[in-house]
Image 1 (cartoon, rainbow, N blue to C red):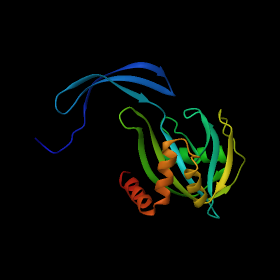
Image 2: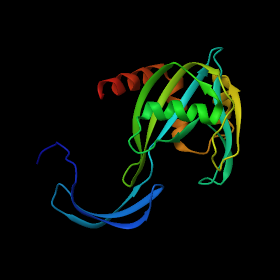
Image 3: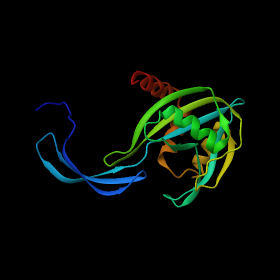
Image 4: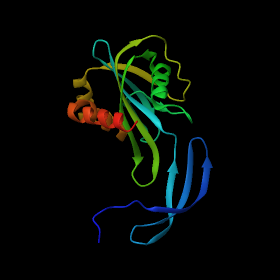
Length: 195
């Protein structure tokens, strides 16, 4: 028996729900490496999104306080937004930052894209670090969300985590990546090598 792990083979897929562009639910037929078959392995397709850790010229971090319907509460989050079909993730990040906050930055580092649902897929979160951000316009997001822009120090972001002020996992992942320089540098190097 080989120690090498292998991906599953997708033998077929059928749509169960198509609420595009927001959600598709599919049932896949898959064959595992040991030959077993699974008839209904459910997959979710949701829009990929960009998540940004944005530092101002004076070192503050641009944050949003907003209601998120998944966790059913108001929480602190990084600027983020959906990537349009065919849109480059970095272009989407810059667009969403401007729309949601009115900030722009010229110094961007890609930290990689990560699937949110380990087995169901869901979406891919593309993480970015932006430095030297400055306010250039008023926010114009047009979303359903009521957002309040806040500027925080890194210490305040840690305190917010300790106080349970974050409600979604990608925000905690981004915070950890940004507060651990070795991890952040490794993510940036990995993102550059996959281009």
